[in-house]
Amino acid sequence: MKTDSLSDLRQRHRGPVIGPDDAAYDPARITFNGMIDRRPALVTRPLDVGDVVAAIGYAVESDLPIAVRGGGHSVAGHCIGDGGVVVALRLMHDVTVDPEARVATCGGGALWEDLDPPCLRHGLATPGGTFGDTGVAGLTLGGGIGHLIGLHGLTLDNLLAATVVTADGEVLRATEDENAELFWAVRGGGGNFGVVTDFTFRLHPVGQVLAGQLVYSTADAVAVLSKWRDLMQRAPDELACFGFVARSSVSEEEGAIVAVAYFGEDRQEGEELISDLLDDPEPLVNTLRPMYYAELQEIFGRMPFGLRNYWSGRFLRELPDELIRLAADHLSEGVEGSIMFEPIYGAAARVPPEATAFAGREAAYNATFLGVWQDAADDEQRIASARGFTSLLAPWATGGGYINYASESVGDGLETEYGAERYARLRDVKRRYDPDNRFRFNHNISPD
Ligand SMILES: Cc1cc2nc3c(=O)[nH]c(=O)nc-3n(C[C@H](O)[C@H](O)[C@H](O)COP(=O)(O)OP(=O)(O)OC[C@H]3O[C@@H](n4cnc5c(N)ncnc54)[C@H](O)[C@@H]3O)c2cc1C
Image 1 (cartoon, rainbow, N blue to C red):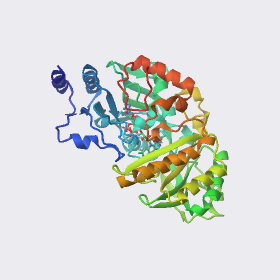
Image 2: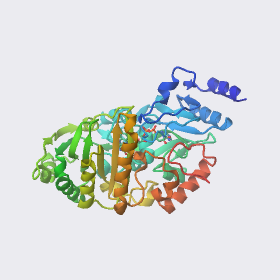
Image 3: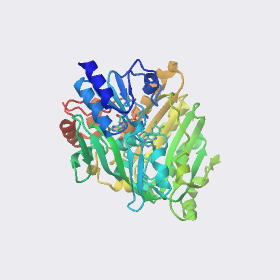
Image 4: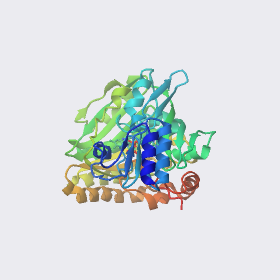
């Protein structure tokens, strides 16, 4: 019966269907985080919505759980699951742009570097993350913090519509008017509700940006990051700045860093805004210059697949000097990693918290420890360093952390993550669209 339905699937599914004996199986198991080593029952690579429906039908008939893969960048490795059917959407990455209406639609397997260029040819973009090779899907479903956050909000704030294939094989359109609860839930609830086969976004004009990085010595971290924090408290939406303290032999970074992107038309105004950051202390490195958005999206380089990663953090009510000091001290004590502070401000902060399922709207900052290393022998120590930093954040935390950066499956802790009311609403949606929890390789909202 099971074999019959697998051969049925192979008949109906026009994209590759990869099993453990196939040459393509091991490459299909590789994800961003080199710590993840999981063995799914099957990897399907659909060409279209019909293939996705067939793959889901097979999984349900065979009583197997389903993992969904967009860009494969989940640090928790949620795009792949032991013993499950992986619906790997990378072959569905087509993009259409309507420059007049200022909307773009991309397939559920698109990366930002698929979506951005055809939009940028018209001088348009939707807010994405800061790395072009991450998936549009996972990033959007969990939030989407990037350079355009101040001007235009999170990525999910710009989502106009999504097509969702649910566990019973229904193909649903989710918008503010159609299946509105589902549309609310996919904007922050992750991949809990089905396979999103396409996303439609609102686009905005983007021209040249004054952007680059200011690098200081770690000893100056408190002086510089407290100035940066004060600047962000009064910053216009056009100014996006992220603060870091880093000590990493993998990325060869060391020091306090402020990454700057000023989207305003008057470059001089941008220079005046950030002038405080240019003296006392003076940056050791200053790479600020005008550039186009496509280049800005490459400014942090690439983080290659295969390195070992453990990321952990919290949304914060505030970022006092004491906490900046704790972050700098944490890295001075022989610990390696990058600590990233992202302000949640401007357009993102003006969206009412109940408008989407995103959990960090009440916070002023997102703080994350990014541990990246090569040697498995260092796993224990590196994971302890990341967790140690997260425990320091407790007095200032609004609740949980940003699910898109979490290395651990949050699962039981999701009520803290989302808050009781939002979590209850998410569970109602989960019960309605995935009552058997077929989609469980994610920060799992339990229907039970
Ligand atoms: C190098 C790097 C840089 C990053 N930079 C940023 C950043 O600047 N801003 C930011 O906000 N985040 C950033 N992130 C975090 C990023 O948002 C998450 O890793 C996100 O999960 C990546 O999406 P993906 O599609 O590549 O992931 P995947 O691993 O493919 O999927 C992640 C989750 O989404 C689900 N999913 C994926 N596709 C679909 C789909 N089509 N339908 C339904 N469910 C789906 C999966 O089942 C899984 O649970 C970064 C991560 C990395 C590793």
